[in-house]
Amino acid sequence: MALKPVFISFILITLLGVANVQAATDSQYWAYWDKSNDWNREAINHQAWDNILKHHVVKKETGVNRFRYGELNHSDKKSLSKYIDTLSATDPRKYSRKEQQAYWLNLYNALTVKVISDHYPVKSFSEIGSKHSSKGPLNSQLVSVTGQWLSLNDIENRILRPIWKDHKVHFGLNCADMSCPGLLPVAFTGNNVKALLKESGREFINHKNGVTLKNGRLTASSMFSQYREDFARDDKALLKVFAHYADDRLALYLLGFQGKIDYIHDRSLNSF
Image (cartoon, rainbow, N blue to C red):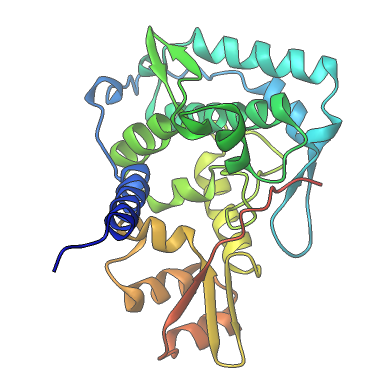
C-alpha cells in the first residue's frame, strides 16, 4: 500500500528530529584539545566572571539558582565581553587539567550568559535559535581559541565530556533551562572546580528541578535521560547515582524505589 505524501513527510521530520537530538548529545572526541601541562602551576584569572556571578546570581532555597540577565548593565556587558576575549586569547592546553576544566566550564557559561543578554528578553534559550539564528545558540560558532572556532556544543560534547569522562561536568554547565543545574554564585577555578561540581550536584539532585520522589512517583530532570551514557547504564544504576548525592532520607527511598523514572523538561529560562 502506497504511503501518502503527508504521512511520509511526517516520518521524515520525526526521524530528522530524533537525529538532531542524538547529534546534540553525542560525545565526539576532539584530540586537538587533549593536551595539558600539569607541571604548570600558573592559574587562569577568572575574577571578572566571578564578580559578575556574585552580583547577578540569585541563590534560591528551592529550585535552580536564577540569573538576573535583564540587570546586566553596559559596564557588566563590557566586562563580560572582555573576559571572553581574554579566554579566547588563552591557550588552555598549556595549563594543568584542573585549570583546563575550570577554563572550559567558565567559558561555556560566560558565552551562554552573553548570548542570552544580547537577545534578552526571551522566555527560553531555545527561543533564541528559532528567532535569531538558523544554527541555533548551541551550534553557532561563538568564540575562537588558538584559531579554532567553537560552539557551545563543541565545548560540551567534543571537549569536556570525552576528555574528562566525568558526569559531574553536567552539574557545572549552564544550559539556561530550569531543568538544568543553575549557575553557582562563584567562578570555577583550578583549586575549587572539584568541590564545586560535587556541591552543584548535591544541590540539584536534592531540589525539585533535579529529582523528586513524591507519592510513589519519581521524576527527574530530562538531563539525566539525555546524557544517560555519562551517568549510568540503566535506571537502576542511575538511582544509585541519585542516592550518592541525595540527602540521607531521600537516598534511602531512592535505593528502595522499584518503579520507573519519569523525565521532565522545563525549557523556561532560569532568569529572575
